[in-house]
Structure formats: structure tokens, C-alpha cells
Length: 363
Image (cartoon, rainbow, N blue to C red; front, top):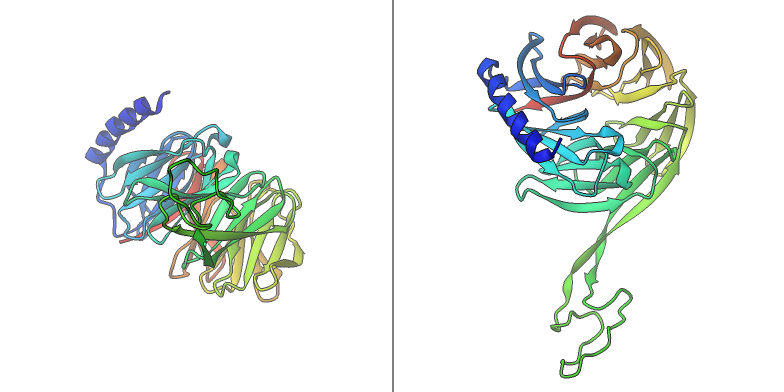
């Protein structure tokens, strides 16, 4: 289907949804249902569905803007698609389909500093989209295979990605000692002079003016386990924990040394997502290869408990107050509600078929 036709279709469908939907609550849980091609808006206090909006083809991850007015959905397609669907959470409809051009396979998403940051798996790249200017304003290659998930630190000075097939994590750091821009070729070499043109000095643009400052990004590639995908940064930003799906292990990276300092035999083959609790005390690991949610004590780095939640699981979302976690049990068509005090499953949320990506909304 052509994307212009798809946009017209989803906008039409969105009208029907709006007529039947309730109001998006100030605090909401977003659930992507892959088989339904839909985003469900849920009231976390009652677990009642407040609305449903088309998500676009093959939705995998979702993130909300800081003001809670918009959501962004990656249309993955294993690298076949190149769009992010923007949803208006106030009116509960699709507001825009963002064309990423050659940046195919968008998957991981986060929203930091007023921008949507995304991975483009098939392009081996990451980028950012500015909703204010409606443009992709930055792209950086990773050179790694299947750059899948992304984390951007709050100051947007450091970025992390997991690269599934390369079995690596890329740490990208902004070099704030930006060098002056150059009008001539890299290295300060001037192109041949054109007769009649004024003389130019090295480091100046053809008009004799310095170009804009060039920001440099430094990349450190850190080897981890095979199938590295789900990961999280500890709340104190000292450690990165990475779940390795093929090895069933967890790699722990020390941020200061930028090296793996320990590999845990986590018995988590098929590990899909990994998340710290807001207090940093526990680490939850979901797997599509088994029925249990694995819970680790972050301090002792030992398994604390396994909770039977279904036939397999994908997305994990922490409630900001630390009372609950939500785990998308994709094969079972429900989202498991986990009490983080008792470490028990206390409920099931039905929000479409094959739930996966989850996000939190606060207005």
C-alpha cells in the first residue's frame, strides 16, 4: 500500500475511533498491539481502555512526548518500512506519518530534549526528528549490524545502542570541543582557484567567512553477548545491563571504564527486554523463550525470583512511582501487571493481540 493511501486510511479510521473513545487520562499507559496494528490508551488506575488509534504497519515500539500530547510509533517491518507514525493523544487520531527516506527499519525510540530519537536498523544508523520543525535534523551511522534499541541520556550528550547481530553496544559521546567549520575540503585543502575569484585562506568558506562549528561524536564499540537487544542504564548512570538473547546471559558494563566487568549466567535465552526498577534495586528481564519473568537483585547481581507470567514476554514498562511493572505477554495477548513489592503478578490487561511496545504518558 502506498503511504499516502495508508495515511488517508488511518485518518479515516481514526475518526471512527474518536467517536467511540473516551478522553485520554492525564496519566496513561500506552500499549502497542502488533496484530491489530493499533495503539491502545489505558487508564492505569482502572486498567480500562480509554481509546484506540491505528498504529501503522508492523508497530514495535512507542514513546510519548514530554508534554503528553503526542505519541510516536516505529513501523519496523524487519527493515522493510521507513516510517514513524505520530499520534495525537488529545484527539486520539493519527496526526502524521513521518517518512524517514533511506533510514529503513526504525525500531528503538526515546523522547529527550523535545526530540524523537530512533534507530534505523537496516541503515545501521540512528537519528533524531524534531517535531517543532518537522524535520530529521540529525543522523549518525553506527557501522554495526541490527542497531536495534536506543537510550539517550537526559542531557543528550551520550547515547547508547544495542546491535543485535554484531553482539555489541555502541556508546556515542558528544565532543563539546567542537572544531571550527571549514569552507574548503576536509583537512583544510582548498579547491582549485577560479579565475577572477578573491583569494581565500585555509579554514574559510568561499566568501571568506568561517563555516558553522562542526560537532564531533565519538563512538566506543563494546563487545557483549550474542543477540544483545534489551538493555537499561542504572538510575545512578554507573552501569549498563544488557540482555543477550542467544547466550542467555547478562553483560554488565561499567560506564567509567566503558568495559564489560561481569557476565551473569542469567538462564534467559530469548531475552527480549531488560529494565531497572526506578529505585535501582531490581532488574527485570523478559524472554520470548520461556514462561517466566526473571528478577535480579542489582546489588548482589544474583537472581531474586522468577515469576510465571505466560508463554513468553516482550516489552517491559516501569510505573514511575515504583509500585507496578507492566510486561507485554505477546503470545498470550495480554499485559501482565506485576506488583513490585510482593513480586507477584496481580492482574492481566487485555489490550489487543500481540502486545509489545509500552510507554507512559504524563501531562
